[in-house]
Image (tube, rainbow, N blue to C red; front, side, top):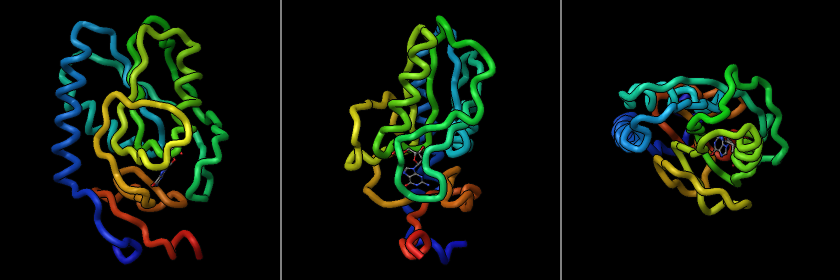
Length: 179
Ligand code: 5GP
């Protein structure tokens, strides 16, 4: 599997350390608040599992499954909700937990969708950010790492549903997705 990677961008240790920092920051900001952490499946699965274990204050978790990319490497901007939240978020403090913000189109759609459900507040935690590729104006509240414009996989992130199980984040060789 490593043969498909150009290089490792973030090691397991680097990710763990940064996720712990984010967890501490989030815990401070949400003391005494009714927090619901919303994992955006499937890419944010590992980030969500690790991040919530670094947040010792009470919270509930919920999941939303969306699809934006299909089999390609570019966002279409067309987002499909495959699985919606279980519980109402009305008057609750919602933290979206995302894997990566690229063009921002997916997040923009999600923000608009969740905002219409009248949460008390709506913030975003993303593990990765590719600021160079932003096409719409969305700002993240908790950002793990800003990364260059390269297609990455691992730690939940896939290409054609593969590589999600890698414990680190690596840059995929372009020949894998151009062939
Ligand atoms: P956006 O709508 O911001 O362009 O794209 C967001 C979604 O595209 C992410 O949630 C993720 O699923 C996917 N994505 C964007 N960049 C990458 C990348 O470098 N690697 C992988 N595996 N997925 C990406």
